[in-house]
Length: 298
Image 1 (cartoon, rainbow, N blue to C red):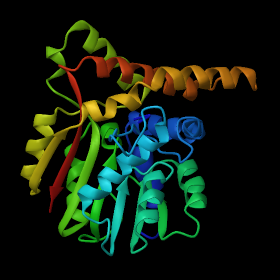
Image 2: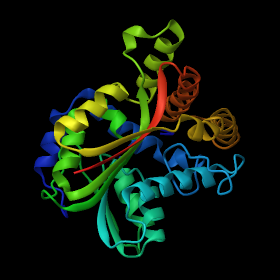
Image 3: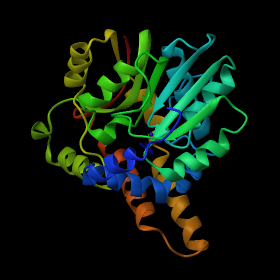
Image 4: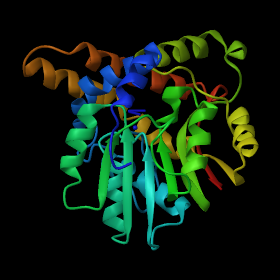
């Protein structure tokens, strides 16, 4: 949230024109605001972190952000194996760079809708066995049964945790391959929210260009309907909370830096900052929202 083939076809441009307004908003948002994430993470990890006593410090945000990457890699079961993985909604490729740095036997592809993320992310991946493509994770051009592992960290929320994204992940995974999703989900339907939860949820979706968030129960059922097995759902809200608490300090520091620099804040930067604030508020409504890690196998 704080926290997206070997070629891109011309028809992809036609498909993008046919996409929803929300999809176009996502492209515009990340093309313009991605560079701001350097203030959140020097490694361009565009997601929240995972606190692990003994391995991370609550005062060192990047240690928690990279621990989230490590936790995802552990659940993929690829920390020592040879294989190919796909990051569905890879951003600037921060997780890809971490994974490739941990296991030189792996190769990785990432997909994003943002041309800025594709161009700049590939520069950061230079020298590593990784590549970022400008594609929609709901309909990639990869052949079926291509990957040993797939991950989605705070990316599927942009399509409302829709079934299409999970079906595409299932299609491109090899039999026995694993999908790991780390993201915020709803614990109940929005019409059951209290006023504060409803307000935070609406503002969060508005400022981060989210269609909606899926309920954890519905998403779990979807995965089984698609054909995934060994579906494991972990509530890691308390592990993620220490990094979320960095939000007000990061927002204050970022605004101060911008005002002391050129004195202006881009519209996309303001949306990003407001979205981060409402992510913090949403996290306080623990009866309505939770952060989960889902692991399943094809």
